[in-house]
Image (cartoon, rainbow, N blue to C red):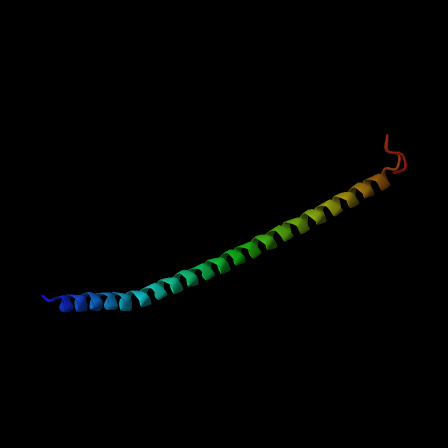
Length: 88
């Protein structure tokens, strides 16, 4: 083999390798980005569900506290002469 022919083989090898690896790399980047965006959307949806559940639980807690105080006031109104409480 002559020196020129060997250089052509190397040049063709490098050219074909780059030609085939560039689309593969672009496809890998696209798949990674797409997967990342889907994961972000999934986490965002799960956080919204958790926030809704927490707000429902806090709303229920506030309602229970209000009902407890109303019941306590009702009991104090019924039993005005409770020992130690005076005219509360």
